[in-house]
Image 1 (spheres, rainbow, N blue to C red):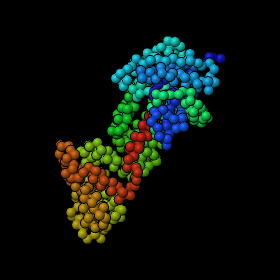
Image 2: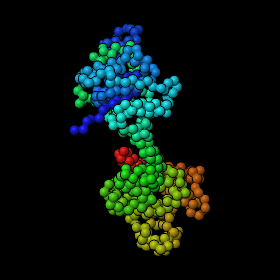
Image 3: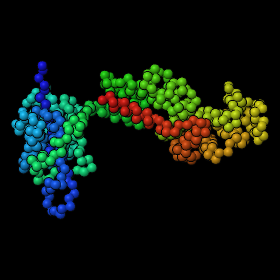
Image 4: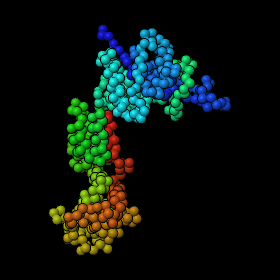
Length: 471
């Protein structure tokens, strides 16, 4: 049977090591700085808790100058480890198994992550020089300053140091207390509540998977692309920055699906069905439902909304006319029971010359005002007004904004080599007012989305969640 590897704990030391103490307010009046026996609650600090759970063969204590001074006064850190080893009946563990490494980082450098990074590398080299590289190295990243913790994380990420990293949850999450200079180790250890707790029930340790820094950068880049709804860029970043053996088919399918979705060209792909991606769409659970009116209308609206979000107002304005025309024809039938495309020439898109009997019951309609006119949202709204087909003030306000947007924005970009700026759009209406009007039109057509207005953001969250699952 192969011998088990030597287990070594490397731990920076913080002010709540070796035991974390909290004082319960006392009614007794005192000026003493010492923590009273009857007013304190004691638990393992991070160092002691990892030692308790992992029971290493050797411990390396990394101390900055101020921590080293405390250690010189009462040897609290080594004493606590010896007491716990005896409590755990670790007969082979003694003071000889504990090494103190004094940090070379001092003064203002204690907030410099780079300084600790270099010093940690020295420490790891010392350990591997003594024991070789075939060891089970565990590292405490809960103790010490933020710079100390970050440097350890980066050390593993960049140098790929083979080790396990552990964080320890604070037993007193609502309150923090720096351990006092007066530190009766034996007395505190006897009151340590972790000594009396079932180790199989209470475990505050969490393993930390330190990713390679390049992988973290790749995820950050992909996340920025997703934030900007740039799915083609996110897909290219994933395929080029993430090493091939870590690329997951589901993530690639989700990014391809999102890229096609933004282009309104989702295909009938078996991978999309396999991962149930069609369910990410409003009013659809399959490709067939995606091609249906309710999903297509919602998807087209959401694409217009993205144009507005990205301040691509020229493309937004160009997209309004086909969207409004389609929905207004749908709403026209709902309000009048007349299928308006029957009165449109399918080749020229003009209103036909003869209105037909369906319009004769609307005496205010002068068909000559529409005959031979190309169908447009403004013409459909005018026709509904002439027919007195609706009485909703909400719909009237919606039609007012849609008509202005069609006349002053869409016609401008259709006939002028000029881009729409936000200032030009605001002369007609605020961009959000235009989007809200289109949303009203959708709802009046019976397309209900409820919470699915933010469906792109929900899809982004799903992609990021799956992306993070890979590492």
